[in-house]
Image (tube, rainbow, N blue to C red; front, top):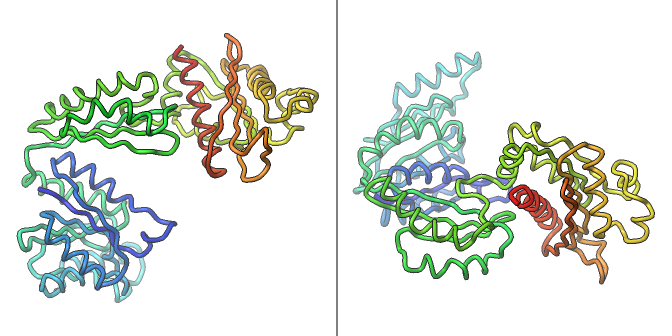
Length: 411
């Protein structure tokens, strides 16, 4: 059984909103052995939705629509599906009662337009929504299954798990799909591909995809087999070769972020870290503290954005800054050593650079970042040149600072 996901909602066609439901659904479907072959987003237009639905019915056995089941005039999913399939809508008393009781419990009057949500196409099953007023809808038609789900994840996810997964499990093939993701840092996408292409090209199963992600490169493997164990064996056969070829540039094989991996090593080695940041403005500290339990190894940090604060808070010599400039290897070293000493940390990290878009010179261009790392073995300083926007420079600076910590602890 192959699947198609259609996300409905004009808001998803704006830069402010992202369709996350399809990611959840794809993971669940893959575990059932159902391959998602198409995904699309369509705005709140009945004509556009009907066009997308006709195409989906011509090529997919399972079509899941998310969103557009609300009470307002721009919620068109149930109407468009009913019209296309030639199935009149009718009110389901149990659904109406549930909506009315929900409003009664809240002590609020029910708007009349909420009764639209009690309408279900003829011959369809309705799926209980315990977290909202819009029921899901399950329809078999023309050899396909259409599943209509509410858009809010807090409603969609429990509904799909409770009402859809058991149904689909009985219909799905006995060929589960499993994935493995290798996260790589310190190599560009082209070099990653040149190293592993001779390894993955002979394989059609697993399938290999290389992606440029935020601050890293990801190698995705997807295998399909008769059993979960066989799928995992296929992933291991190719994956072990890829991991060997990429060496210590691979920092995760189980989906962890770099800050999670660094935190794990800090705990294992019983090390602590403190940071002094200039151009990253606290981004490294923010990433380290994203990880639950980070208080056991992250002591704190200083955002030393001005030269005065570099001197006052971390003890960087004003003369050193005047002689070499704030963006220099001596200053990065002094930041790392100063914050380590003042915090009493095992490791001190100092970051200085020019994030742009202005402030660069011929000798110190925008994108220049210098990172120092100090510990009991001494201080290492590395210089980087990151292309792109201000946000990209800051992201990569924090990424390479984490990578320097990871490698230092592993050595």
